[in-house]
Length: 331
Ligand SMILES: [Zn+2]
Image (cartoon, rainbow, N blue to C red; front, side, top):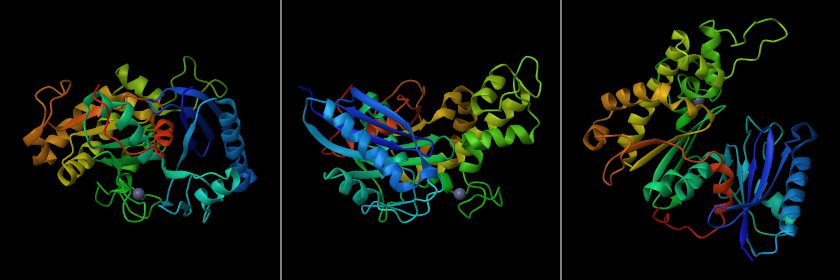
């Protein structure tokens, strides 16, 4: 009988629960809409019920429960502080509320940190057998997670990895965090769509009309760029510039062997990578000292920037959170 842990991904739109083996094999999963309008306690009831439902079906031993949540999340307490993507959850103690419902210990972490942890153990970190990595997740916002010597670095109060809110453009676009010119305002899927509207890009439909026009998405804009649309290409060039500036700071500060770019918008890697690498080379002498001769060939002692390997690193990382910290197994 296969032992397993539970990974939970609490998102603003969907609530997902999975049973996962320590090797990363998914045994079962449930996906539900997050009933934000019903309030946090209804969402927690849904979550507890889904977790119990999955546990009851598994014959193997339960090794623990890990939950990934959007922040700001105070750790190790597990208290949410005005999370912009979880309306009504301000002040909620996610960990103790869930432990009370399940009568079992629960581990909680930032969704972006857990995506980095999943990628560390089962994705790019596993492939390259590194002991540390940083991951930027390009989605609605820009998440960031840091794994140092096999452990999630969460910082003094759980706020490590807020690089999405690192200002990179002086006097740039105001960000909801209160700063201006944050990476998130230039490299998230949301920012890609905003730029497309600013540049007057129309939705890609064969015969645009009020009824048939689809909302413009980052992936549709990536398709336009792939087809050679100059404005769409410009947008991804700007994304690459923003990522390169941010990575220059991160590489200079951390000197890690691997930086992973994940999230939905990372699928546009071929569109933003050239400008990202040229900006990083110009901006970081630490990178210039250790850059690979060929970005596609991994060598120890070299700084690598690579696309994520997993499409679902967050929930896998959440399932690994309750397990003892370990080094990634060699690929
Ligand atoms: Zn910000």
